[in-house]
Image 1 (cartoon, rainbow, N blue to C red):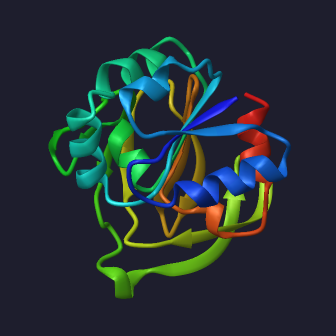
Image 2: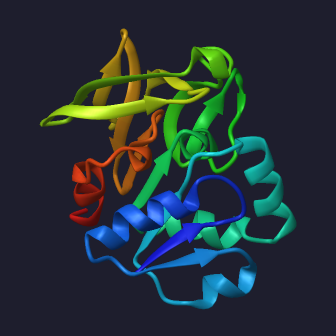
Length: 183
């Protein structure tokens, strides 16, 4: 069972991809939702500032951070990557569970959005949709780099966390989600 943060962003698209692989999902919208048993966690793309405020306001922070730190497999895309990052734009991050330094809106505004294909670990020709995307400026010890786009780190794995700057949920390719379910 996968809990999908559903306070803002493209959570439905993540649910559809996981459900296409037979995974049951539920939406995390309030603290009471975190009482349900789950063995995976998803932080979707969207607006990281809004998501972090809502996580705080809805009193989700402590339980979510505890789940990540306890080893629950966690998938984060775009804004989710920003939420997990130790450092963002030179400031302290939100959850700080992923030892990376991330640059927000690294490719510019909405008009800087683009689509490409590339490698994701051993997977080749993976579709990558970048929308007001961040990238990782530096990865710390123990972080496995899975994707590099235009000389920038765009996907990593660290322990139980799988994070990327792009949106695999907006493409039809299920391989990244299958990788996540196999963690």
